[in-house]
Amino acid sequence: MEKDQQMKLKSDKMGTMPVGKLLFNMSLPAMISMLVQALYNVVDSIFVSQYSDIGFTAVNLSFPMVMLVISFGIGIGVGANAQIAKKLGEGDREGANKIARNALFLAGCVYLFFIALTFTCSRLFLSIFVSDDRILDQGTVYLNIYIGLCIFSLVEMTCSRILQSTGNMKVPMTSQLIGAITNTVLDPLFINGLNINGMQIVPEMGVAGAAIATIIGQALAMTFVVTVFIKRKQDVSISLKGFRPDKRVIGEICRVGLPAMVMNAITSVTVSILNGIIAGYAYAVDTLGIYFKLQSFVFMPVFGLTQGALPILGYNFGCNQRARFKHTVRLAMTTAIIIMIVGMVIIQFGSPYIIKIFNTSDEMAPFTVNALQIISWCFIPAACGITVTTIFQSVGNGLYSLLMSLCRQLILLVPIALIMNSIIGVNGVWWAFPLAEVVTVIIFFFIMIHCFRRVFREREEMFGVVK
Image (cartoon, rainbow, N blue to C red; front, top):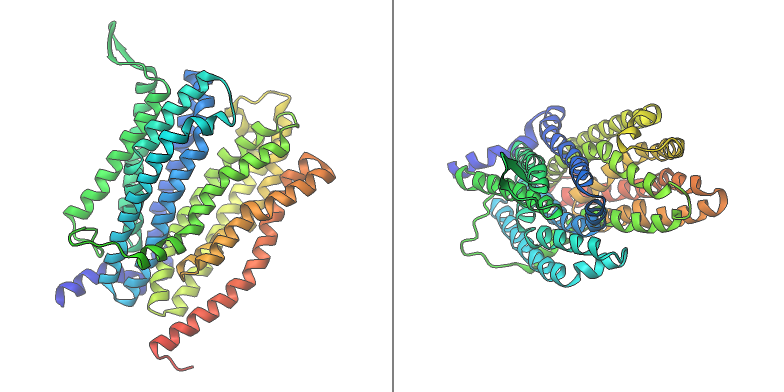
């Protein structure tokens, strides 16, 4: 009993520590790691683009399938995170262990699916966009290496989210840094090779080298996280000794994690559709690509913030701490809005200077600046939307979270873009971003209020609280 109590104390801070201090401690490491990830994506693109235009195109065309892998990993991790935090809040440590083990099993099953997918569909997928055999060859090699060894990434993401559910945010941040730094160091080495005094130390591998560098970074990150689980006692165990898959638990992980997976995967679908809408406008496709690279530096910290808030919300929902739950929601949403306001101001006034890193021409620059300034008005309602999505996830309501994610990024955005494009042209497509966010927030805000009252009323009945 005493041992179990000591183990519980690590995650118990989510029910006792002052909310402001707790949210800061939980979110800051995640925000840093997400910013590192955003920076890594840009740096990786720079190295490949310097090597060859063909390689750069091949990697860009591979992006949707790479995002699909990441989306599945995030979905499993978020589903496990919310459910484990809830179980810990209820004092059910064995239930939390069961969820963690089933999450890892699910990650392994997803890996087998991707193995089959990449070795049968990679080239076919790339051929939808291009017919150049050189691009197809390099893109196929990149995907076969990246997805063929994505088990490291899937396990690392799952284990990191499990640790986050217990309040441990520093280890996931460190693993992210290990992966990003390793990849950044190895990228130029493996892409271009290393020649010292006429002796070829490392062969030139081009695009394949970029994929290998990424895999090595992911493998080291996974090794670090798993070692922490093995060497240090955690609130949750991932030991598979005597493990048997549980369909009900796996179903719960998928139900809660599906919105997070969709939210990440749908970006690739949306970008493809929007590219089709704006393809006839000069500079529009490149401008949209620049926007998505830049917006990650604003959105990623907010995603890091909600990563920190999710286990706090889940824990306090689990132990029926309504006041702490509401306090966390208010603080998280306020902080998200402040981050987005800062990002919007930077885009509004700094975009003429920021876009220079992408070597935009004098003709393209004003077009791109105008687009960025219009789209950035979506940042503030997006802050509210992302926070509300997290609230739904924390109380186990994956359906509303899923619908909200779809509305923000597809169901409302694409039709509004089509209609606005027919009315005022390409600027209408840019205005579709803030309009879709505003409409989504208005609709789901009232749904959130109703859901919040209902789930806490049920929780109070469970705990025998009389009102």
